[in-house]
Amino acid sequence: MGSAVETRALSIVKGFVCAAKMCPHNCCRGWQIPVDERTEKNFKEMPGLRGRHLRFFLTSFRGDTVIKKIMGRCPFINSDHLCQFEANGETELMPLVCRIYPREGVKYGDFIEVTLELSCPVAAELFLKNKGRLSFVPHSHIDPFFEISNDDSAFLSYLLSEREKILDFIWEKDLPLAVTWNVLYSYISETMSLIMRNRLSEAGEVSLEEHLSAFQKKGKEALISFFSIRTIDRMILDHIDYGALFIRERVFSDLIRDYNRLFKNMPVKTIDRDFHEAVNSMCAEVPDLSKKYRSYFSYNIMQLFLLSYEDYHILKPLLFSMLYTELLMIFDLTRFLRNGTKGHFSRSAPEPKEPSSGHSLPDEIQIETLYLMESCVRHNPYLTQNLLNVMREETL
Image 1 (cartoon, rainbow, N blue to C red):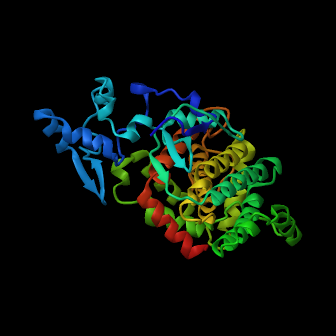
Image 2 (cartoon, one colour):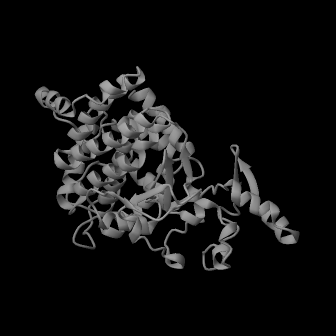
Image 3 (cartoon, rainbow, N blue to C red):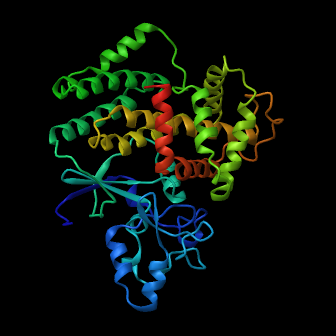
């Protein structure tokens, strides 16, 4: 692909520097590593014994060519926990995803957008240090890992302007996140209905302000749990906590065990209200936590919204953006309560302990929770489909 294609990246991308062998969560472990066509061709054209060795580690998984894992790890990782191909200067043998990770490039029409996958600990830390509204800035060319095939330029223009409108609403209105979610859900539901009836021009005229006014006139308090805790619980225990999670990521598996102990005895009739109050209490005690959730929701919108260029389903990226943010709240709350706090959420919770730092959710714990949730939930495409099925049953 020629470099004439415009490339723009999230403003935090330029600050990324790989931690290499100092990384606490090696990116060669636990993943299904897809092999792009060019890299597969390089493997297959490698002569002699070396070529046979490389091709031995190519396998198929659900129709895709992937690297065959050995004991849950990439077989090409060296004793320093780094990619042997990169160490040898053989980057042409690295799958594209490995060459660009944690950057993710997606081509839409005549431009490429590059974002950071927060499943990388360095990227997660970089994001948490730059809480606030991010922007896209010019960037050097990066080969895209995905390309959205669509020639509907009018719809792409609509998506770009709509994303900016949504981001303006998130940051300029400064409403409680729960209110923001409810208003955006109402607004995007209406616009999507028009798009599905091939009335794009009318969708562009729908007023977000009118949806906000209509919500405010109802005078109904919005709870932070857009998805009921019953629905989230079903997602976690039936899908996110899959059988191999204990082997793939022990820390995250233990976190789900803690979640289950803390939430399982809560009365169903009041659990959404109790969760709302518990999150507000946690945010009051932990500096900048409310801003982090707004930032994470905004980041998800920036990364996911244009993906609807493929299927026109603009409600889906909104739902996933809210879901991932609510899951992050739940796992933060679980660690907050397990670390010890003056408040409590469940009779099954342990006795409070004295926090080891100024508050009971230190930065390093927040970073770890974010990159574990991203790697185990957000960037698991097979899990994503299962979560979407639950959302369709419970919400759509």
